[in-house]
Image (cartoon, rainbow, N blue to C red; front, side, top):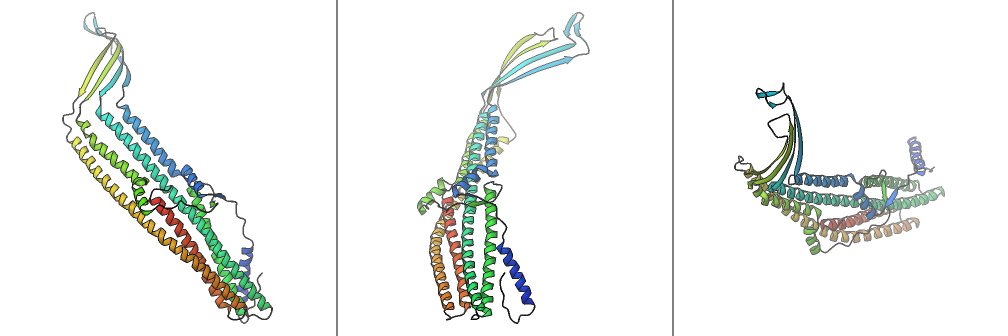
Length: 433
C-alpha cells in the first residue's frame, strides 16, 4: 500500500488515500489473460481469405453463375419429353351400327424429341451467361482484395497499439522511479510533500494511459479475430515487412491493369458490348426439328403405333417494339458501364498519387518524430539529473516526462501512418494482396 504524507488537507485526505490505495491493489492483481493465437500478416490475410463469410458468399455467387450458364445452354440442346394420356368416355362410340370409332377406355402415349437446328437466341443467352460468370469472378476477386486490405489495416493497428502500450509503460516506469525517489527523500526528511504528491499524480495518470492502451488493444484484437473468422481475438506474431512500394509511374500503370475493382468494371463493359452485338438474334428465324413416335389404344380407325416428324421454322415479324426497347436499354447500359470504368480508372490513379505523396510525407514525418522522441527522452534525463542535484524542482521532471510520453506516442503514430501509407500505395496500384 502506498504511503501518503498530506498535511492540512482534512478528512478528505484519508478518503483519497483509500481510493488510490484500492486502485493500486487492483492494479497489482490483474485478472489472468487467456492465451491468444498469434499470426503473421501473411497468415492473417490467408486465414481471412479462406474463412471469412464474405468470401464464401462470393464463391457461392460463382457457383450460381455456373448454374445460370447451364440453364441458358439447355435451350440449345435437344429435349425429349414423354406423354401418356388415359381417356374415359361414357361408353363406346359408333359412327354407324357396328362401326366403332372410339372405345370407352382409351390410352395413348408418345415421345417428343425436339432438336434446335438454328437457335441464335439460345446461343446468345449462353454467351451472356458466360459473360456474367466472368463479371462474378472479377467481383469475387475484388471482394477478396477489399477483405485482404481490411485485414492488413487491422493487423497494422494491432502492431501500432502494442507500440503505444510500450511507450505508455515506459512512461509509467519512469514516473514510478521518480515517485520512488521523491517518496524516499520525503521519508528521509530532506524532501517535500508537494514533490511526492506531484510525482504520484503523474504516476497515476500514466497508469490510466496504460490501461486505456490495453483496452484499445483488446478492441483491435477482437476486430482482427472477426476478420479471420476466429472464435477468439487474434494477436500479431512478428514485425510487419511490407513489399517495397513501386515508383509513381509503375504504380499508375499497374492501377489500370491490376486493380480488381477496375477489372470488374472492364468485365461489365465487355459483357454490355457483347449484348449490343447480339441484338440481331432477336430478328433471326428459329429452326428446329421434332420427331414423335406414338402408340394409342381405343381408337379403332387410327393406327396403334406410328411416328411423325416436323421441321418448324419460326419467323418473328412484329413484337410490338420489344426488340427495339431491348436494344435501346443495352445501348444505355454500355454508356453507363463505359462511364463507370472511366471514373474508376481516374479514381484509381488519384488513389495512387495520393498514396504516393502520403508515403513521402509520412516517411519524413516518421524521421522527425523519432528525432523528437529521442530529444524528449534526453530532456527527461537532463531534467531528472537536475532535480536530483537540487538545481530545479520536480515540475520540470514531470513536464519533461509528459513531453517524452507524447513524443513517443507521436513516433508510434508516425510509424503506423508510414506503414499504412505503404499499404495504401500497394493496394491502390493493385499489388496487394
